[in-house]
Image (cartoon, rainbow, N blue to C red; front, side):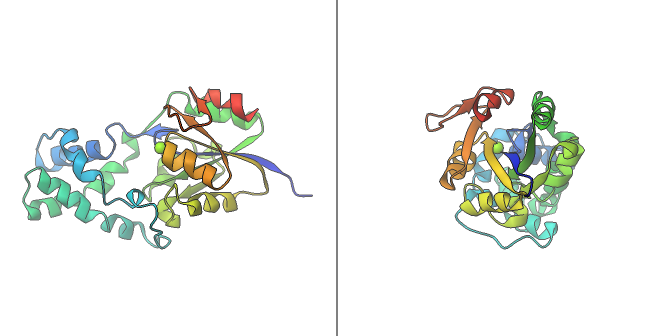
Length: 230
Ligand SMILES: [Mg+2]
């Protein structure tokens, strides 16, 4: 009989790791480094509320062939945001290519304080870890650069599969990547993408790092997930 395994599927951004300043912060860094402009990241935020694949999770994209194509489809979003800061369209176009290396620079990413210890502890307790993330194509190298690779069994990334959480296809892609899963939980910080999405395909889910009345289970900290998974 095949060995049955217990899996925890983790969201990445806002759950295991974060990029201080997020997208607007990265865009402001580009303006600072490459144009010498000081822009309040908050002023960039409104133009970044649409245009990313995870803003339209109902739309399924073809599986990614090349990371460059994934990023190219976002160039108009970056350009519009820069134009909104007063740059000419030509200048905005010239700067937009700098967003990719700036956002995906692992030196800009941080693990939450509890991430490694909790993942290690749960591994010792017999759980295997997977990551299911709506993310940029560089997710795998970010996970590796942050030192998480030895702890993570599977990585399923929307940039590669074309399915953005909470689309059921995202969770099905994660589930089908697992070997003989006997027990599976989804853990994440987004009530819509992680929790309600997982529950819509029958997975049990735990909301972490924030609160929402729609969540059946809320863990105060990552280690607090043990309270639910037994
Ligand atoms: Mg998240």
